[in-house]
Length: 111
Image (cartoon, rainbow, N blue to C red; front, side, top):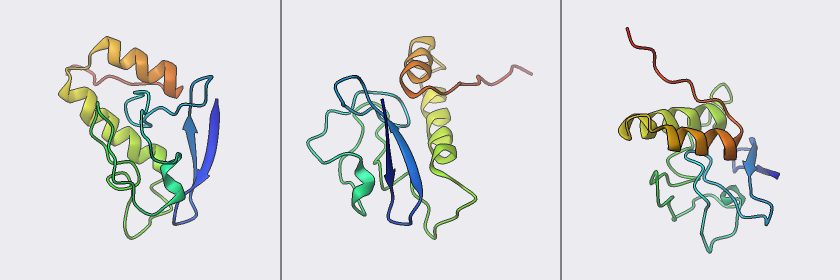
């Protein structure tokens, strides 16, 4: 399931959810067990963070001043890459991200 939200800058953002409407963290794909309203972009700052990747959605993943040439999916991909690198590119985590967030994770090539 997908839900589109608009952040405080007017950027349209797609969030993914399970069949029960529970959202996944857009960085790591962990099921978001937050008591706050979702999607978090309905307000300026979300004070909660993902329990797996520690991203403060609506805080660490925004860019001020707003840059329309750096959309949320690209910012999330950079945060995701750093998180996966920290975890040694764990195939289980990669599979979770690809399945839940419907994105392809490109592992770094060995040079």
